[in-house]
Image (tube, helix red, strand yellow):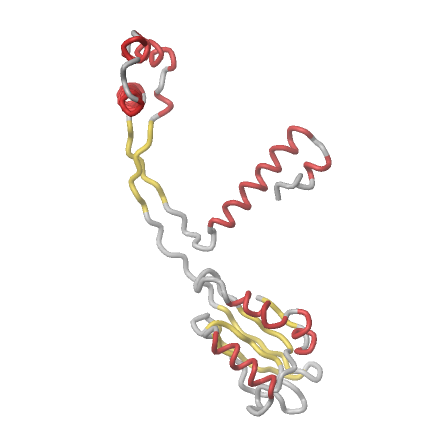
Amino acid sequence: MQTTPSYNEWLKSYGVQNFVQFFSGPPGRCAVVVCGDFNIHVDQSQDAHAERLSQLLQSFDCHQHVNQPTHTAGHTLDLVIARADSPVCDLRVGDFISDHALVSFKVEGVKNPPATVHPVQRRAWSRLSPDAFAVDLQSTVLCRDLNSLSDMSVDELVSLYDSTFTGLLDKHCPLVTVSHLCPMTPWFDAECHATRRRVRAAERRYKRTFVEVDKRGGGLV
């Protein structure tokens, strides 16, 4: 949720470009609500600022929810703006606590989709015995007679390498099917995942070095 300063300050500090950033994200990623004293007379259709704001909202399929006067002068200045499909409800213009009225509303939480489980095949690496694997590897053609490989092409060598190690892994570290639970957090996208990895890497580095620059992130975050 983002509150705004007066319109003049908003236009100078945020402007159209920053307003675009609020609503240009993928729909459904999160509920974006912009509210506050815009100081725009949206109740006057001939007002140039009100017309400009209306066009901007239409271009992003957004809706301005306040339709009552919120100022003692009888104008609607305090606005609540959200996407047309955002769950803004129970909006009420209350008593005047200054020259502006108190505007209250609710934003319904978006329910997480049900968790989905997908079968995934993985190697059972815990079953691998390095010593037994090394013994079997020594008995393969890759290790017995290297001279016999001299006449083989690169493609043939790669194919032999792949088939030999695949066979050994299937014996010593077979594939097993496990159930993978997909996360129920659609907002946790690739950017969030990358940020979390950088933060954890910075934490691990500081625990090793205890250097002040690593404590501040060391360029990782």
